[in-house]
Amino acid sequence: MSELMSAEAQERVLFMRQQCEEALSMFDTMSLELESKIAIHEGVLKGVRSTRAERNAILGEQLSRLEGIASRMEERASEMEEMLRTYRLQLNKLTHHHILMQSMITKFLSKEEERTTNLEDAVLYPGFDEAHGHPAVMHQQLEDAGTMLLTISFEIGRKIAAEESVLSGFPSMAEEVQRLKRARRDQFI
Image 1 (tube, rainbow, N blue to C red):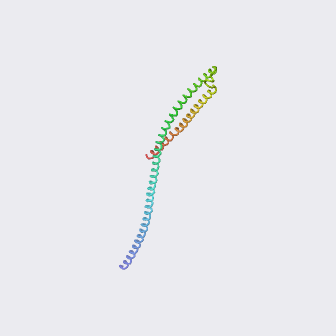
Image 2 (tube, rainbow, N blue to C red):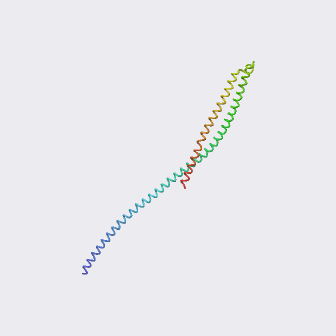
Image 3 (cartoon, rainbow, N blue to C red):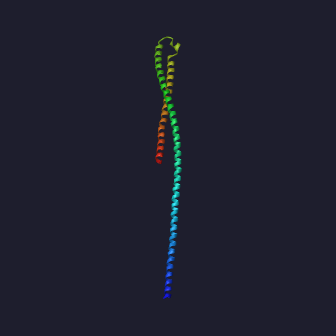
């Protein structure tokens, strides 16, 4: 019986050895699969980290460029505000000159009317042509001077209108810069 037991014990040992070898083989296979899955997950994790880092770098670059653009726009807005002040001063001067010109034209027209009345009265006196010139020539000279003053006045008025149209564009540009500043500030909040 002891021989049978030993044969039986040997069979059991062999069977257990096979079982252990199969278990070890399965363990090795599972270990390799787990290592492969771990490697895949580590790769994915590295990819996510590098993608996040790349995305952060790109966003940082874009933010830096936007800040540069905003800075240049602020500088340009300051320059435009200075130009606006200069234009307003020029417009005020032109308006003042236009008012003076209108006043001169009014005075000139009233004097011309007075002279025309005087000329009509003076024509009745003998010897007026020799002393003062022909009334029609004098009247034409006065009309030419009046036309010249009116032309100058209209030119000044045209310049004022042009300056006002230029000035009307500035507030909207300044408002746009302010809107962009607010949008940038809100983006960081």
